[in-house]
Image 1 (tube, one colour):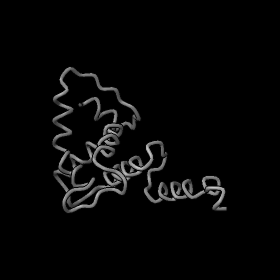
Image 2 (cartoon, helix red, strand yellow; image 1 turned 45 degrees about the vertical axis):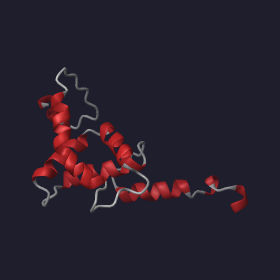
Image 3 (tube, one colour; image 1 turned 90 degrees about the vertical axis):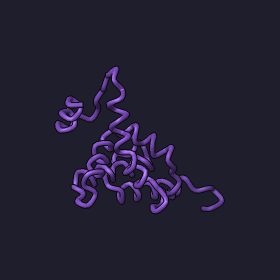
Image 4 (spheres, one colour; image 1 turned 180 degrees about the vertical axis):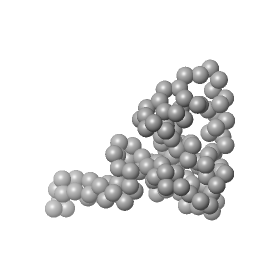
Length: 127
């Protein structure tokens, strides 16, 4: 995990972790799971429109940087640092479009809206 932290600090975009001790990764995710549950919809928080726990979990698996942000929120949920907020925003963007290059939720929303409501996507009888 020390090498992963070093790679994350130095802005590596991909990290390959090989270990026979998968318990470390699973235990880390298990500690982050309550915040993930609260963020993706629970009894008191609405879920993301059209995206349930399965798709949120798949997005989390493809975006492992979220785990450290969620772990930080388990210990300091009141003072959310900018880098953690950026990570969460990126997760939301990826949840709606896994190929999106955007970091900002509003930019991604604008592009998704424009893509879905383009003249080329409209049915010919609607023109």
